[in-house]
Image (cartoon, rainbow, N blue to C red; front, side):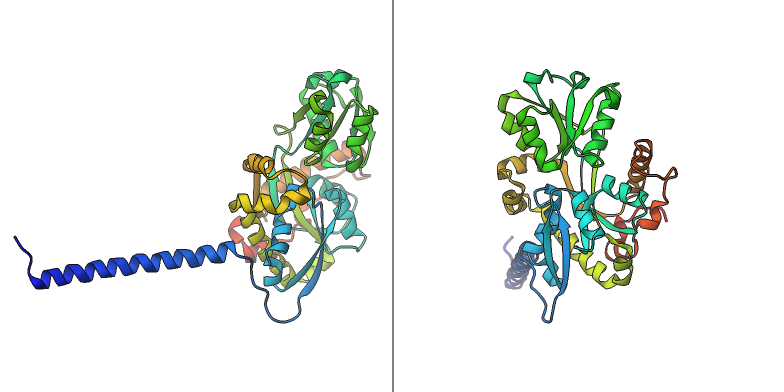
Length: 348
């Protein structure tokens, strides 16, 4: 049956409406994508200066680097100076000594500082990974398997997450810490010690592990601690500064949330951004990226990790304390509750 003119008109109007809806949908999608993928625009007026100490050679610093380079800090009214250090421990020391306002730092260094009565407040976690710490050994020094570490000299930065991971790793092999000789080096000195043969193996974290293994070529053997330690990378500052500057903390968290989202979702762009400072090829970074979890949160697992590390630190006499602190006293919840309340699972 043929359609009437009025029916053809209705169909034409319907098709026009559908077409217009599709165009509007595409325009909206393009707008949203542009908002998500282009750097933020700085607001008018003076910016608040903040110094953030971080290990720029560590992949966990990606949210900080992205927030600076893509304008997320500026969009929140922050002029961020990124101060480079070789470890989270050194970054935290910069805050303790008044040379920086905030530090990116793993859980172990925080546990040790708090055990030693430092008034620190943790404002958020920005990064987690399990395949980050490990051991690189020399095959020509008879390091061929985890058990073969017995009796060997192992370079490590004492009192760091590398040291903690090494202890737990040895325990998994039914080896006591006393069955190896630990030699203390700064993180950046470990590779040279291994190359010179001063030690048979070294314990540490990325990017040093890959760099040091590459230096050994086919002589290297690597054992990762992915089943014994999860690195929880955080932002922390002095308690007085944090509590006296709640708006600053809120703006900092909003910028870091954007930086973490970029690092999580825009893998190609993020790996291109951080590759020069991490000193790893973009291809290697993209291959390893699935093991990296970026995002701001305050999870109960952080408290549990700090408590476990406190027991280890007390046993190894890294503190004169014999009791475990109430770590909830060192978590600043207000900022995350305002910015990302759904990402706060700490019992309080």
